[in-house]
Length: 100
Image (cartoon, rainbow, N blue to C red; front, top):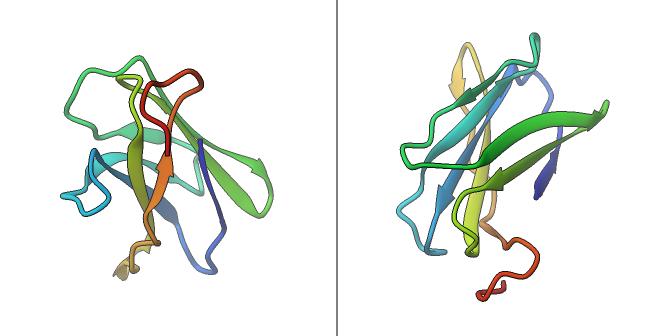
């Protein structure tokens, strides 16, 4: 699970993933703030991907792809373009052989 706080004027957020902390990072999914619609952008098989706002000032991303640790970045976007990506964070599912 990866979570982040809201960014003023953001109309959506895009999550990027990589098997390495140094990348390359590819798009995994995005969410529209206005509609809550999640668009899956990952190009590999996955079991489950979801983004939702658990509170009014944060978002949460959950992914089940291959049971290994994965590295993530998040970027806010609006009609003017995409903002800078966040710092890299590591996540691993419970019981994974590779931990962060």
